[in-house]
Length: 480
Image (tube, rainbow, N blue to C red; front, side, top):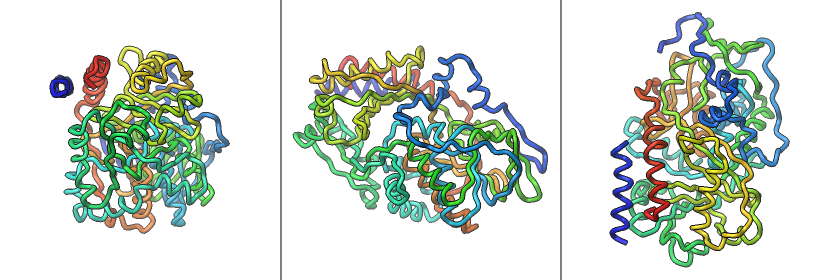
């Protein structure tokens, strides 16, 4: 066992070692070509998978199709207090909470709500924060933000309950599993500061308790994050958007923002068939920016990820795989994060191969092989692929999302890495409170200027080209 641990650490360490212009006055800024429009026009499906731009209708979160509003294209000119650009988890939450506060809010979405990462992510609800060091630059060293996090880290469940939409948001628990106690101790130390401040409720389990929860004897110990769980992010996004519309928000789909200009202390954004003039504009485009504000296209590291869903499991597989219903992740490196949803489907996700990002069958076979090794009794059971898709993750050097102000009244809220299902609704809510009160000085997080990253492809090369292939090799030969 000790030698296996050393080999595993050597493998991971080896992988790690290998490893604009401002807006001016009333001039219309058109900037780069619109990335979404340009990529969506591509005829090469493999390229769309590579860029995380395959149609969101390929996402398993959209199945079976539900009655979800299709919002009309903007035609004509209008005015509003706040204009939100992008109807993902952050933008829809921002619009909902502004509308609740009685603020006139308009939303422009290039496609339809949830088209980007919010309709494609892994569906995990993990209410943890990564790096306590980021709070050194926060107002009152993060005390107010941490209190808000304590009160609202269950926001996906709470919004579903309060507004009555169906998003399969379930506080089922979140299991981080490890092959040995050392792995769990190391992992737990990363969030010990949150436990000490009462921000997390965590239970360590093992033995028969762990076997009953997972149905597998592959792991020795686990941490169960009690407030963790799962959500259908596409339906959460659309539930928030529909609620915002019901409360008075004006939402327009198929309306990409094409140009922006200052206009007598306000901002005017043009679309193909209309315009919106607003006191304040908030871009919530995350990993899918358009081109009109170059600063937001250059300040993050894009990374392509994939996810897939199985068909609903047969009875024997349901009894075998995660009978406790928790969301599953592995320590020290998570190649096979797993959710079992209300339809008894498995949702599995990872990073696609460099050579064949569109090869659904290869990625499914890889996941199925892991399932069979982890739950040997599933060999011969009918576990079939239903859907496969890719999407983009927006990463940054700082372990916290970005809240930006480029000029007075022009903001950005984006770059959620893997925290989107909790942090995007939460940050949208908190920013809405500051905007509604016209007291941005009271926000519990700092407002930054977006800084261009020097090497946008860095994370893709480190994670996708080096670390993940090395980890898959380690998993295949039994080191992970």
